[in-house]
Length: 103
Image (cartoon, rainbow, N blue to C red; front, side, top):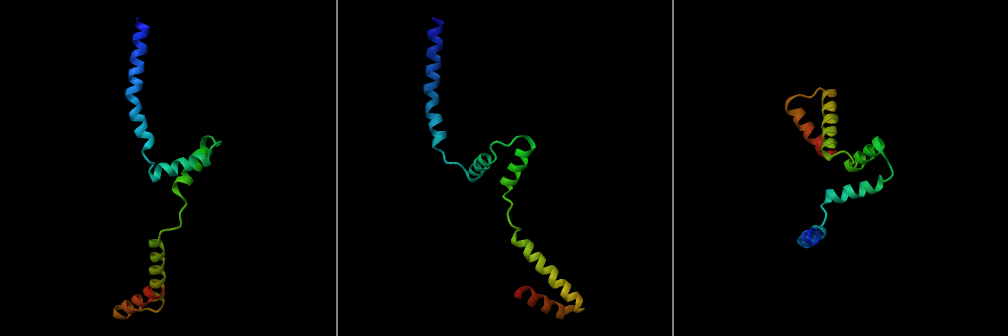
């Protein structure tokens, strides 16, 4: 009797959970989830620290420096040129404006 009762309870629970599992399978992955799945597949077979390092590198994307860094470098170069020419005041402002636009 208890065996058939526990079987009935298990059957009832599995039937009630089926729609929830179907909804989870139908939900598309986010971009982050897709990236994690791709990186995990690439690093399959690696273990320990090698796996962690490869995952970190893959997930960070090793992207090129942001454009802000290029503009910071441009500002640094123009400042150095203005200092070399010993420009001050309005002459420096005019020079910097032109220097930053042409690069």
